[in-house]
Length: 221
Image 1 (cartoon, rainbow, N blue to C red):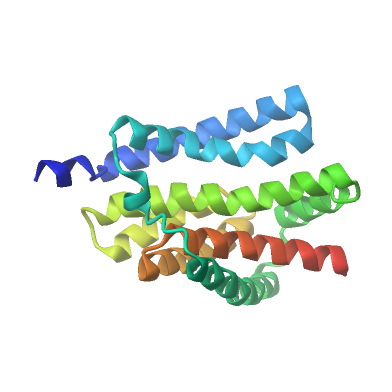
Image 2 (image 1 turned 120 degrees about the vertical axis):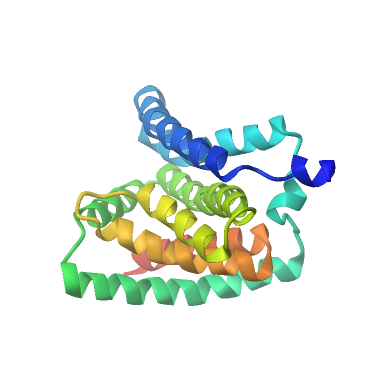
């Protein structure tokens, strides 16, 4: 029983950690941009998302690999790549539906413009690719591996999925709410994928693949 207790993260502690993570990402990202420029900030700011969750798990001496489902196997990576294509198509469908209902999202258009401008230079393109890959790696650890698992340890999967997806959407906040809603819906899908395969690798690769496909299409059209 002691071993089990030591590997369970309290939902309230996990939610508090996510709140602190939001503040760290908000102010840390701004500080990085001021000190090192937007390219560097974009490339490494995603790492700020894992500082608190990872630090807490290390402090509690949790077996992180076992807890989040860190099973790096070729088949899991291939599965993530394949699922990434399907989730990307789903994301396009959701984005188009939201566009029809609410109109264009200023936040999404601004983000796309910044990505295109950065991608015009080799160093900027590298920074964008790193950021998009790290987004999958870091966000899946924080929202699925850490938060969703913690809530699911005490509450039903439905509650865990809803809360983790809401947090994921909030981290993609925009005043119009379009980007937030889109991220929430995609978060539900990623949460389902993580839960079904119980694999951080599958969800992280899926997430990163979605991002990279979107970038490739933006650069080609």
